[in-house]
Image (cartoon, rainbow, N blue to C red):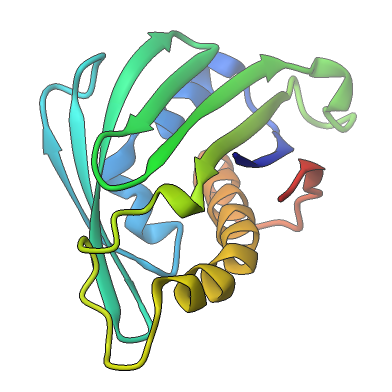
Length: 173
């Protein structure tokens, strides 16, 4: 299993941050490759999200299910089609990281674990002469960049304006 774990600080309380983490419908604004999100459910545990992704000449719809929510601390998800993948969003109070002119802060963690070799070869229509191994080799390093972009844009949404955020990369494949 490959694992990406990164974190950053948002200058808001966990109670203010958590609704943004749970708002999957907004995620196309946070990433360059997520084209659309369709929700099946009320957003709580058991809700399923169809995440339509596009990159290069490829499109794919991942189906993600919310498996646990502990508000305002964590949301766990897993993919339910074509690849073994799961992850967690965690939010922890970290008031000591707030600058002097800000009341409080929270650390936001994004974790994703996945087995790229578990991908269903029939799930993606590949161009001629392109192998799934080639796609995995090209996509794997982009996943960290995509995760960083999501977290940076999420913080801008939470705080209401863009700023340079410091990302801490705890683990990468």
